[in-house]
Length: 93
Image (cartoon, rainbow, N blue to C red; front, side, top):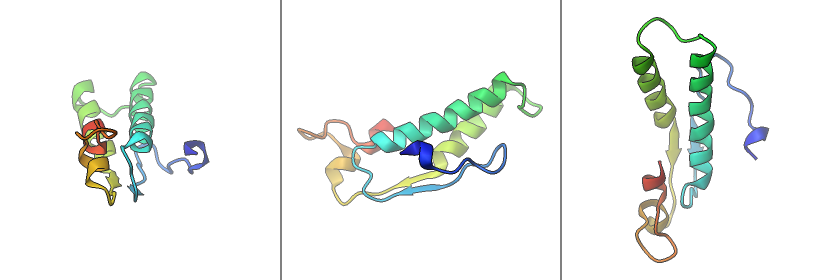
């Protein structure tokens, strides 16, 4: 399903993702992983701008995380901690 999403336009452009009915966050984690892989790929190919690698990674990792928005009607799906929903979407991210 994720392979059907369009590729971001710019090198550092992260599309905002809004996910209603996020469930326990499996889809959200996969999206965040892809965004973080892209940042790592930029670093490996020396596309990172000037500045320390740690600063670059931290800034863009936070940018990637902040571009994901999710809601669910079930509090258990978001928070977790109940049988069947031990780990919620909030904890996963």
